[in-house]
Image (cartoon, rainbow, N blue to C red):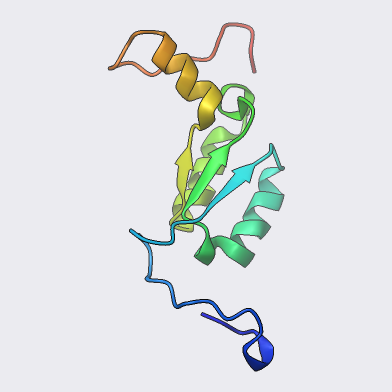
Length: 104
């Protein structure tokens, strides 16, 4: 999909989702879900993975809405490295860590 005028920034055609090649990701920096919805409406066709940045998976009270938006646009939601490292350090390979008590 290339709508650039006169061949500007020509890129190869990408296969449809789910893609095995030319996978793209974006970093969710705790943007409001309304902004995420607008972003995905505009660019969701080009994003394959949305990574939750800086521990957002632990503290976001709108995590389920965020996940629904991503699913609706065929975008995989990644827990990000903070949550993944916490899980890896817990020694458990079957249980995902819960949010620490006192966190949102």
